[in-house]
Length: 141
Image 1: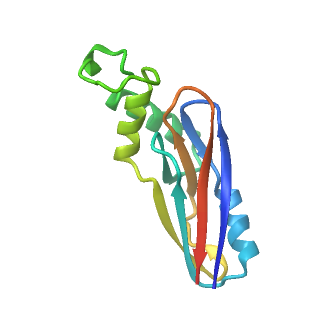
Image 2 (image 1 turned 180 degrees about the vertical axis):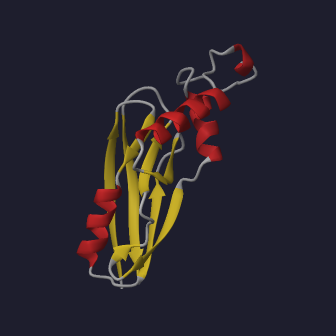
Image 3 (image 1 turned 90 degrees about the vertical axis):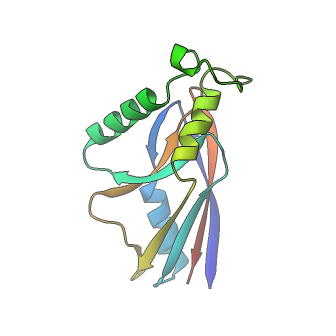
């Protein structure tokens, strides 16, 4: 038995966008007690994370860390970048997505996601402008 859906997440720029509630609702509606939820992101300039969802400072610090780790192509430290066709945030977004996952697997136990108490599921947007991002959710028993 399997269930599948496509979730669209609207982003407003760089940051972590939680969609734990939507994933939880999908699993609850599927009627599968034991299985594996696979999430797959259909983009190359954003990524997926399981991260703390209790203290918003965690998200602030993660975003700041990635800005320092991979600055905009306008930064002199990034002058070696060749791909700049879509603006100074484009290639840095691809680098960040290469460092973080575009798919996740979460066990389902008792018809619920087996996430820890403080864990949430996030789309990590790496581009500056708004986007509509698609995440495939596939639940298999």
